[in-house]
Length: 219
Image (cartoon, rainbow, N blue to C red):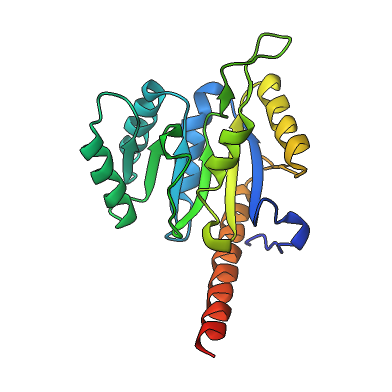
């Protein structure tokens, strides 16, 4: 039985972005993402953000071993400008479903086929740190990252993975700063059904909104 959920207007924040968090142990984050994506029922594309080129390489290699269609985009010297442009064009054309990237893609990329953004690493502000020595969350970068979904007035979905209490506090800081609620995804057998149900409803709502807009334009 698939768990059915209904989106309320109160859940649509930051221009229609649904935001969730999920606790994972450090070694299990990539496995969790692989299982999540394998269980997606729709053709929406996915962007996964990480904080370093080194970790991006690890994620790409592991997801490819799982048989997933993955591309990599970073600002490192290993990837020349024309190679980055080619990779972006391939993603736009749908030649692969999942794009792993650093903050290079946090701004200026607009594509309606992005249904899900995953912060495998929460963005950190390296100019500041908390009393315990942890880096604080980069609030502006967080907004730009999750803004890669829900473009042009569409609804989108973002999932933030965290491992420590310090990272959980970063999510609380995001909630306080933007006045939003980031719900916790429960660890249960129907968890992936829930994500699929949200994405199905998002796809349906976005389609209805586009059709309404087309009707207004054609009148």
